[in-house]
Length: 115
Picture 1 (tube, rainbow, N blue to C red):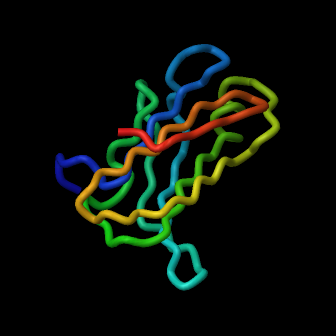
Picture 2 (cartoon, rainbow, N blue to C red; picture 1 turned 120 degrees about the vertical axis):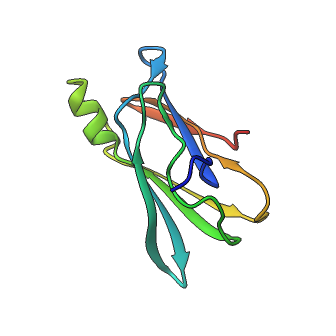
Picture 3 (cartoon, helix red, strand yellow; picture 1 turned 180 degrees about the horizontal axis):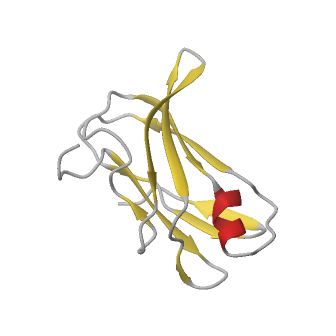
């Protein structure tokens, strides 16, 4: 992996404590004719970011980012409802950067197309 940022990045914020969620395991997968194939993984850093999640370039297609929220909340000693969050999205422009943020709490989450 070079110093360049991955084609897909994420940022996880724990809205319960109002801070970045460090130490969240994250996987990036590609939909290959109905089979999910892992193409990268990372753990969020102290700022809640995973900028080295996968390749610098990706082909258009359907991708999935999975967050192991059970591991994160167990480390925080917090009982949570969602053990994993999966976000499936279409990567349509091979030249564009895709940022997929996650706002997280023990009983809710939200996401949006970031920049």
